Length: 271
Image 1 (cartoon, rainbow, N blue to C red):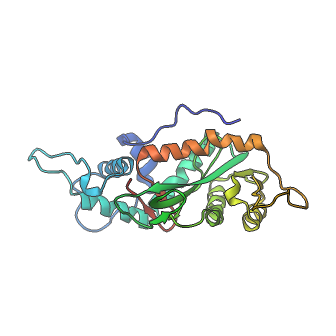
Image 2 (tube, one colour):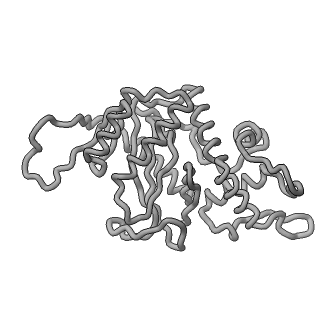
Image 3 (cartoon, rainbow, N blue to C red):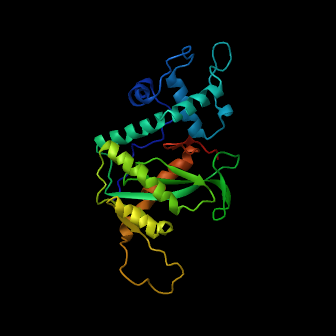
């Protein structure tokens, strides 16, 4: 069964030692132009603060210098965030974190839980749509985590009016890419999902990667059970989602911002 991890917390501020060990080796360094007036460590902490608070960039609580002026303009923080995102720095940081968890034997990938959620965006944002089921405007996010609530693949996001089922097929290549990079063996891993993802293309995509789907079959309006061999479904495995993937979404709601680091985008959606 899934174990509780009391050491997990939302990173909101890194010390200089933590930044130099986990972040600085993966950031792109400019080779031309004047040197920064503010260190990359301080800028990265401001980025973490913006993602945690979910506020607009111009509303960041920036410290003031001895002249009483803000030590940095918020647009410079935003430009640094976008530059590191476009250079693939966020992907490298995420991959290194998964590699470290794997090296410390904190990953339990015998079962991988996946699910999607809709993040509200009342004041605008990127890639939005109205969800008729949730009755709100926002974006959908699909996440994959192990039995210890560790996110092991970049989030996949889509407008709020999109169907969640195809998002699984977008997330699986990213999962296998991360697993190949850090040395994870996913053969025989059980992929646990709810009935929203019950379709032939999803099951085929899971099988083709050597994993076993544990998906609650949808009745689709049938009065009786479907003929033929019944697909694998273990209710005990499915119940683990309430201590795993649902905790991940509770972390996302608490953080106030959805940090979607992927190969092509990294954005935030303000609540």
